[in-house]
Length: 328
Image 1 (cartoon, one colour):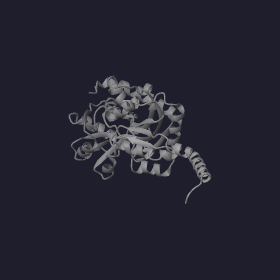
Image 2: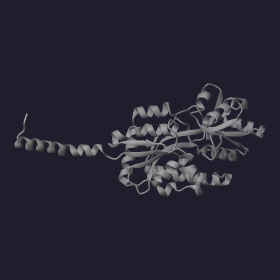
Image 3: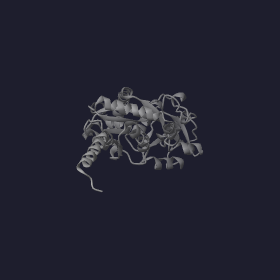
Image 4: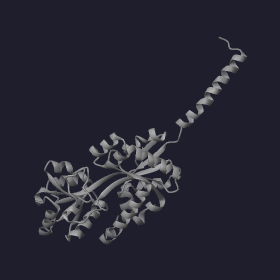
C-alpha cells in the first residue's frame, strides 16, 4: 500500500509522540548499576549474607545491583577498590567486622585507608556469636571445667583459630589474660581442618563462629562450652555465655555491614540504609539468615554502626598492641 505525504507526516508524528512518551521509561530502565564489593569468596558466609540482601535491592531501589568479589587479604582488596571508586552513590562494600576492625588494627601501617575517615557507614544487618568448642578428651563440659583442665595440663593448653590476627585470635588472648592461664595459639588455614582436629581430639579447644561447630556439638562429638557475647544468642539459646560462668569476656560479637566511600551524597546513603532495613523485615530473609546462615538479622543504621565501630576499635586496640602480634 502506498502512503501519501499527509499519511507519512501523521505516521511520523504519532511515532515521535510515542517515542517521546516512552523516553522516561527507557531512562528509568537505564539507570546505572550499583556495584557492591565483597572481598570474600563466592559461596562463603560473608558472600551468602551479602547476596541475601543485594538480591532484593533492585526491586526496592529501581536499578540494577551487581555483586563483585575482589577476594583477598581479609577484605582489604575490596576496601582498596571502594577507596578508588568515585563517591557517587554507585559503589558500596559489604564486609564482616574482620575487615574494618581487625585489618585496621593489625595491619594499620600497611593500609591505604582508614575506616573512620575514608568510608561512610551505611548499615549493619547481621550479627553472630563467636564461641569456644572443646574436645571430649578434655573432660570439660563448661568454661570453668576447661579452665581447670588448662591449669592441670599447661603443656597442652591451646586454642585453634581459622587463621591468625582476627577476632578469634584476640578473644583467645583476652580469655587467657582474664583466667590467668597461658593458652597457646594454634592457627589453621580455615575452619574445616580446625574442626576436624577438634572432633578427633588432636586440638583441645577452638574459638570461632559456631556454624562449623554446632552440628558436631549436637551430635555429641565436641562440647561448645560458651559464647563470648553479653547475652545468649537466639540462634543457640541453650549455650551459656562466658559471663554467666563467671568469666567476663563479652566482646565476641561478629557482624556484617555495608559502607560507602566518604563523600557519597547523604541521600544515597540514606536510600540504601532504608532499603536494607526493609529487606531485613522480610520473613524469608529472616528465615534464611537464621536457619541456613547461622546469623541473626540485626539492623543498625549508619549512626549506630559508626558508634559500634569506634567502640570496637577502642576496645581491641590496646589488647592487640599488648599481644605483640605483628601482621605480615
